[in-house]
Image (tube, rainbow, N blue to C red; front, side):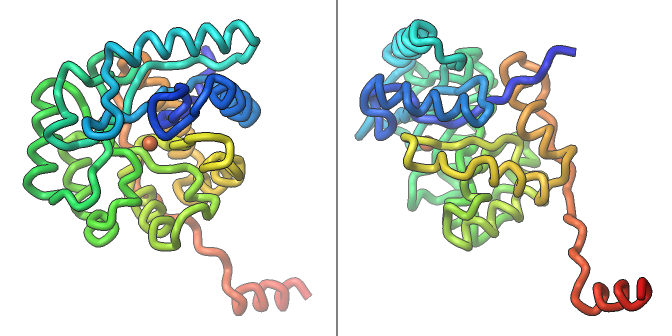
Length: 267
Ligand SMILES: [Fe+2]
């Protein structure tokens, strides 16, 4: 069996077009770090946001190709996959500007604007995308205050076929306690199909990812961790169905009294 890809679904690695890497040298440093931690493929999810980052499919695709050519020339074994992170507002959500993952027209990473009503406007935009045959992947739902408050909103979206991506570094503690608890709750309910770094440079969200991977396995179990880290990302690239992780309850660590009884029996 061919080995599965290790894909970072969310990364601002393209130079000079959003708040991620500023120069090709920054991109190169980030790429080398991702390779170091075992990543083989990265989806280039530069922002598409009408008021701040007016990127489009037409401007992003050549930059993915030229950045890949640079990495190949300097010997960095990292495959870039086209993509974007679309701000879910009426102004940014114009079909001509979308760059879907792998430019396959099947999945797009979407970011919710702060303060947007989640029931109503957001429902309408998400379901409109689905009606066009494009499955939205919600970026970092654990950071959205309304979803922290009411996780059932995300559960209903996932029940309707919408997907979600969590932020890996949060599992290594690089987030507020509330964000971490929300993410772990989503993961244990099987609401998160993918994880991503959301790295903007080597200083931000890229440290301790190896510890985060260990924590992921503790939170969702080995089988789900493999699904989230390898199987679903691979399916995204090949067009296979994305599988929803099974709900998981981590085993409870033995309490003090139980440990005392065990040692008493051994004595
Ligand atoms: Fe992002």
